[in-house]
Length: 144
Image 1 (cartoon, rainbow, N blue to C red):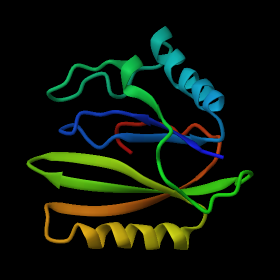
Image 2 (cartoon, rainbow, N blue to C red):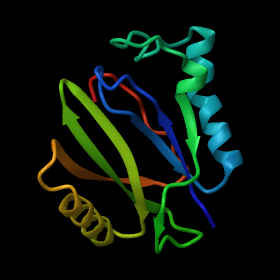
Image 3 (cartoon, one colour):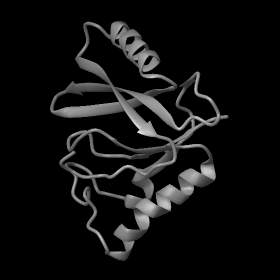
């Protein structure tokens, strides 16, 4: 069963893309997307990414559901997963790619090491592992 990742695209000059959550179904990801967007669109809360360097913000387009992140050993009823992200930094830009969703921290750490090993010698490249509850919308703050 595929998992769906929810992300917020960010200008590479302003910061890396934001991970907003991982969900069991496309419908759950759509509901979380609306939960994120609606308070901003109504004006109840300020958009933390309203201004981005060298890019016009398009809230509706920038909050996206991603279905093609590879998964490793994640059980259908998993309550927690580990997302491996790679970061490439150079020329005052940060590009974040979501590389894998793993069942365990050890599996995620091993995946991160494999990815980093493939990219040795390039720009500043590293991976980070984020553990999160499946089905929970993460807070999105500019200072986080």
